[in-house]
Length: 317
Image (cartoon, rainbow, N blue to C red; front, side, top):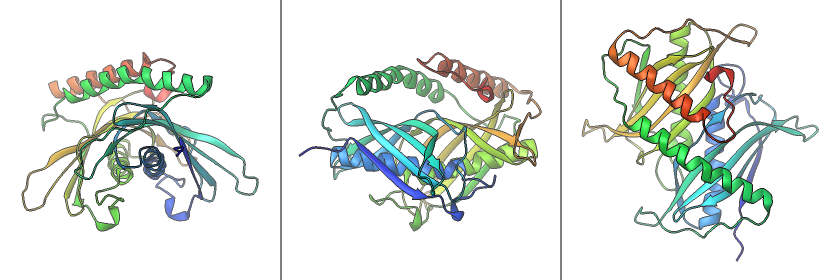
């Protein structure tokens, strides 16, 4: 039996997808990305799959409500239990059916058995030169990803920081469930976008939108009924971008103990009344923790800048 290496979802962006900016916000796009990549992973592995990592995703061109959206997820490399999936979001006028790419990223899923443990997946073998080049790209990102994860893992966050910080707390609802009875990874990414936007808006005093998310690592499952805590903290300001570190923690409400489930770095930009991005007041680190986290953020920028084929946009500099 042949296994599908690619899945495409096609639908119209609905009014309920509209975000704070008047266009479809980044959180909704991340939900679409996760769903398409999940479908590709399950089709390839014939097993239940979980999101473990979402690589750099730039939101350069927003999706408008009413546009025809295509989300294509394609297997480009497999490990023993993992599947590396290139996901492309395109959108355009439904009257013509023509679409243009709005964002793309690399998503990694792991196949699991009934006991929740990873299980082997069929090996992906490129069939032509284009597929070989995409697999080379996935392999080149492995070292970069390891560097990013190691840098993010060694950081600690305490109350000694002085930067803008917000914490959202709520219970994971039954409507957040995925096909395996756990919270959908795309829902978690939507929460991350909400918290980052609130933090950036409070700092800038202006409407904000996400232009980049990177290093989104899923460390443990999040269950329906869990108490969820999403903490977003400003750690650096660039030419225009506000770099927001976001951590998601969860646990059973009766235990009062929360465990980290997901973390990432999101870059937000402020917009004026015409929708154009505008500079924000530079943030000046005050405490030792402020300075340490700012240096940590610059380290992440340099790691990404050194990655093969990367050209950092202005908001990340």
